[in-house]
Image 1 (cartoon, rainbow, N blue to C red):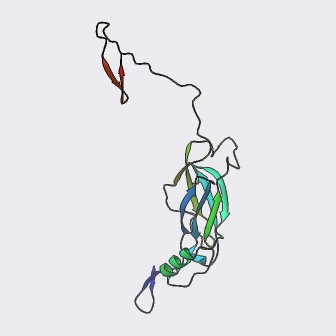
Image 2: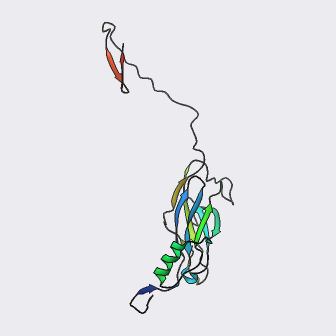
Image 3: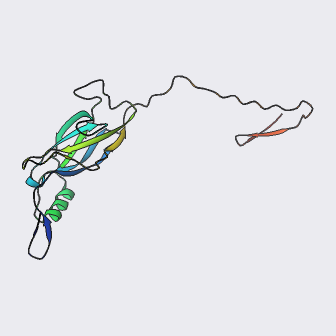
Length: 178
């Protein structure tokens, strides 16, 4: 359903599931940042739930924050999209924990690649809690990368006939005379 305002501008109804996106993840700090808003309550912050390695229902619970950071770029975008003045706080910063708060065996800062998913939690209207963009999640690797304790050395031998005393052999860009 869309409404047409004076001037012929088509604007979507101010209702529906939450909208938003994970803008990125700082690999230095482990903080995911982005925005989320509920079209039903455009000037209010909403809760955002995070899961790792799958969305809600298949992923591992990582935590929640409220989208309470001022993002004037998001307010401008929402104002243009919904043809109304939006002044709420819609940004979020979520620090990815070392492990799941509900299962400490599920670690996230282990040097392995993981994927973070965010869900905007609907405030009113009975809409679904929406999987925020990108719906495929955002990949991240945090923590120390594990290093194998052993190193395998491959030995290559080159045989030169004993009667040839001045043979040049090129190895890895260098020239060796035997």
